[in-house]
Image (cartoon, rainbow, N blue to C red; front, side, top):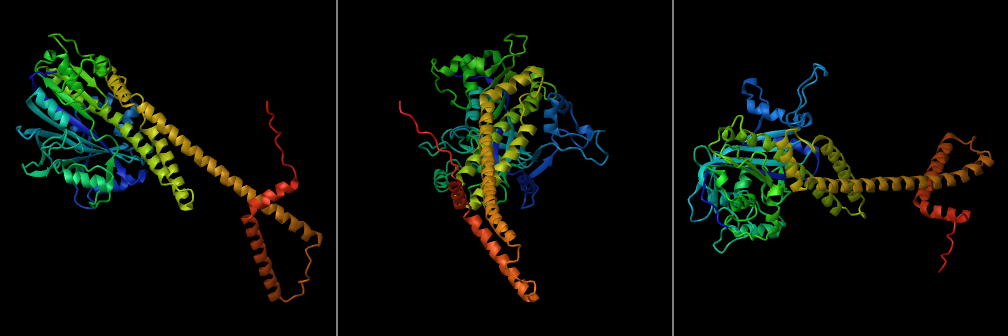
Length: 537
């Protein structure tokens, strides 16, 4: 299938990379992350930002207002927090949002070479943010870049190779397979801040062999600092590791000169840009093509007429692509049009869906890790396992009641995009799977607690029986087996200490042999019910 050479007047791509913060699943780990981003352990280029609700109301734009009112109240409180209401006391502060945003301003853009024999393409940076969620060990790296006046085949080839944490392999020339040939991270003065290293095959192979973990590309390690790889040797208090596939989820905005001139083959390649190299043949009998439009296209605003609108939304779960007319003022409007919605409302929908998936995968990963570290023969391992499971159970409750949404908006197209993204990502099934895992762990802890209580009751019962015998005997003799009332005080104290030590020893021996004593008492009672013999037919 050949691609049309139509120009893309403007294209934007937003990468949303979920990462897991190490070393574990504890809500208080947000504190060292905050400290690291604030520069407590060394220099940091991240700065906390009020993404929408700024301190100066004059900076609150209409696009921020439209984003805010697009969502349901529960989602509003999740995204933006809650102001102080009259129902609260005057000293009660406003409730902060569970999500915090940090931003870097030192990166002006990326200069990329798609292939060794191609001219570099300049991608300008619009945003470089890090989303941090309270009580969850998940962060999202958000990188938005844009460029103008590029041919469609080049854009699709760039998108196919862009947003990969590491190369999938290497070609004979040494270039990383499915990766960009070279990426330079540029500062505002044009200086090169970091360069990709996908061609260093030996480094990637040796790291994977030594650590059983993939090696992340140099440009991504630079953008994430002061966060460092969990398995790497680089010093750092806050470490990260991948929680999903190395292909980062992305949003794409394509402003075409004439989107109606795009053929079905063009839309197939646009839809499959994250999975199939542009220009590669796709067999007409491919089952993906049979349901391509019904499962991935949202054509509420696609009229295919000269009057328009001609805006097509393509949602595959891992990608959200918007194709429209570059000459349409509404489509290109960054304040009230589709472009504003793409950068605000659509981004939030995409972010929530992928945060849900990343958090659930992190839960599942932590539960598996806890079980793998469990050694029932070691008491300290059992105690550590219980602490980790109870912490996970508490965090999962927090996630369910604070972050888990089935609906985010009553607007038709917003609800449709959210539902399609969740359906394609399979978050509902993943949630039920993790919920069942947490329930199994909780049942295990409850059963183990009941077992420990039963053993304690058994020991106390045996001790009581033994003590009952001694109590009856001493009571029969009136507690005067020895006439010690006339003895000197020192002798009485000595006899008291000896009797106390003997009693403690007897109780300890009884507790230690409680199981054997219980079995002896049971056999002595002769009250065991025998099961009737099975009759053979």
